[in-house]
Length: 71
Image 1: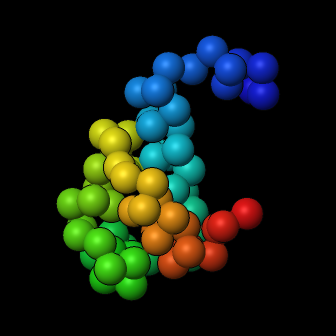
Image 2: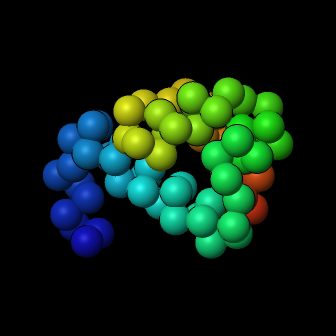
Image 3: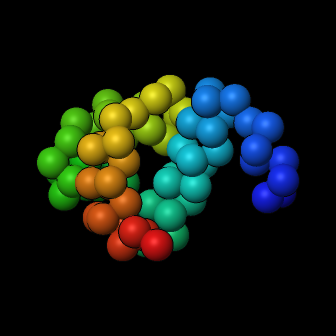
């Protein structure tokens, strides 16, 4: 999919990243509320991020740190 990613719209990127964040959260067996609390963001922000509805870069980074996925 590397070459296919170049053609994604911003909205498609949001959905793609949201799915990856959700998978990472489930892999460490955390619910959205726990991730939100640990990341110091709202549960709604985590839901929006995972749902591909947009998020700030700050929220994305905070959530990725909680999930130990800063790679």
